[in-house]
Image (tube, rainbow, N blue to C red):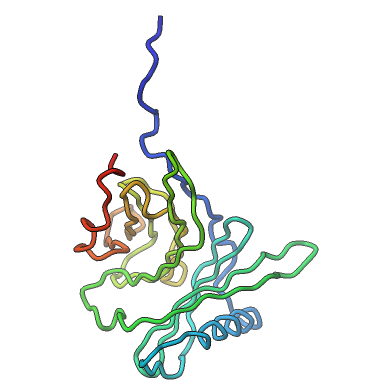
Length: 222
C-alpha cells in the first residue's frame, strides 16, 4: 500500500516562461517611426510637476515580448535635462490577415539614471502589465522588465523568483526584455546576467535592499 504524499511536488507554483521569446529584430525604419510616435505621445502626457524634463533624445527600443495576445516593445530616451524617459508600446501583433492593431503606450520618467549610479551593474526599468492569481488567492504582478548590462561579457539575462528562474532573454545589441511574475508569496524578482558559459556576472533586484524586509509579509512566507 502506497502512502499518499502530503506535500506538493513543486513547492513554488508560479508561471514560468509565459511570454514568447523575442520574434523580431530591434525596430528600425518605418516601424521604429511608428513606435516612436506612440511612445512620444505617452511622454507628452507625463505630468512632471516642478521638474523641467527638457527635450527627448534618441529613443532606444528593446526586444519584443508577447503575452496574453499583446506584444510589448519597451523604450527609453534620455532628455536634454538629464532625465530618463521610459515605458513601452503595446499592440495586437500582426497576422497573415492584418497589420498590428490596438496600439497603446505607457511612459514615465526618472532622475535615477545609470550615469548617476556608477555602482549599478544592470540598468533596469519595469512596469506591471497584468496579474496572475495563484494558490489561496495570492497574486503575482506580471512585470515587464527591460534594460542593459553595465558590465562587459554578458550573453543572457534571467529573471529569478525565490531562486527559481521564471524567464530569460538573450541579449540583443546589449539590450534585454523579461516578462515575469513578481511580488508573489513575499518573493520579489531578481535579474541576473550570465556570460556565454553560464557564469554569473551581475545580479540586481527590482527593489532597494533596505525595502526587502518592509515589503515581506510573514504570512506569505513559504
